[in-house]
Structures are given as C-alpha cells and as structure tokens.
Length: 106
Image (cartoon, rainbow, N blue to C red; front, side, top):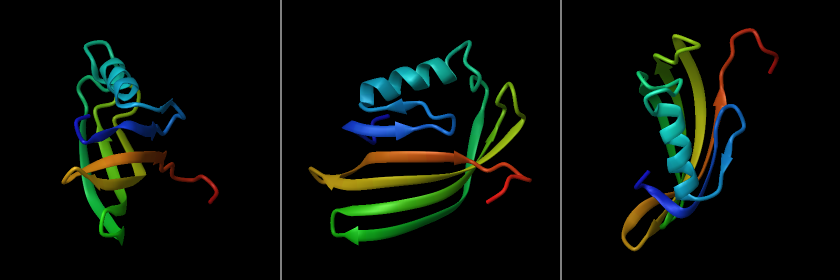
C-alpha cells in the first residue's frame, strides 16, 4: 500500500475499482483480513517486464500466481502497473489485473 500514490487507481481481476490509496487499503483489508477470501494466500511473480517510458515513468507487466484463495487453490493472472518517480520514490499510479483462465477464447 505504501508504494501507491495518494490518487492511485487499482482495478482487480473481478472489476473492483479503487481510486485512492485509502480505498485500496480498505479493499485489501476486506480481501486479506481474518474473514477474507485471501486470508491465507501467498503470491508468486515469476515473470516481470519493465519498460521505461521516460526518466520518471515506467510500465510493468507481470505474470503472477496466487496460492490459497479459499475458492480456488491456484490462480494465475497478468498485471499491468504504471509507476512514476515522485519526490525521489517510485510510486504506483495505476494497476490493472486480469485473470488467466485456461480454455477461454482470446
């Protein structure tokens, strides 16, 4: 959460859309808290590609696996993240995650 800019926007694989760091923190507390579906989950990010669009902005794509979702033992997704260097720190300004589902049309 600390890497997010104050006005960062985050879209989950299920379409939840937060528009501030505070909204994202509340969503993460709900999803990862004591009764949330990801309360015992772990995440692995085996692939990450970073493309610098300028000295202070970059776009990242990553493949990730989530283990321990109470509804699905393994989930795979691809995420897009835009980061900017602000006040000497890289901060996330936008995130979009997409579930990868075998057998779906592309």
